[in-house]
Length: 240
Ligand SMILES: *Cc1c(COP(=O)(O)O)cnc(C)c1O
Image (tube, rainbow, N blue to C red):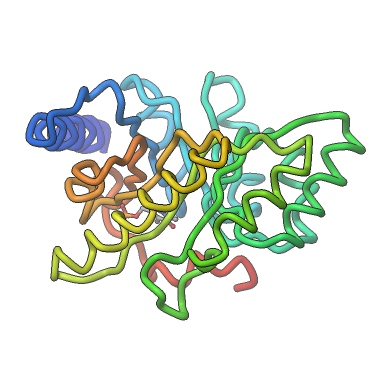
């Protein structure tokens, strides 16, 4: 397993580098986040031992289960799944550095209240539904400015960027459209003075397109750790 993960990481870094070359971008400007849902703490540690230090989890339950084993390793942990408002407390308890799936006002309100109570701050990316699929979470792009300005009122939440999940399709131009849309939202929000410098988009299957469209972070799971048991929609739903 160790060499497989090591080789996979090397291969992903190669893909990122090649995509950057084609897009005339500096590979230093694209971070690799390892999407570690269903991945054991043991396998995550292998990745840590190979210079990786940024992971994304989809469920509080899993964060909790791996918390003690991963704690000794310096790393950053982002939350990338759909979060129920009653789980906000747990984000803070288990040292989540950033929530990338901030997709509704009610969640932001709850987070602000809890952060105030704990006298903490947290980084956040606003998640948008750029594929317009019902199964995907995220704020509607039409609401971007309104939503971002509302979240900006919450002084404990530090808006750092935007996140989206592209359409799952073999038609590259349709996938690209999603990423272009997120880039457009970014420009719109930057224009309003909202510092959304990070663009988290692109996964195992479409990271090249995302990098061409300006991703500063790609989220990769299967291409590093292998196939998961269930389809992705299963993991996006915190309730299940
Ligand atoms: C699982 C997941 C990823 C990674 O997907 P892969 O196709 O395994 O690379 C990225 N983002 C989110 C939100 C995910 O849930």
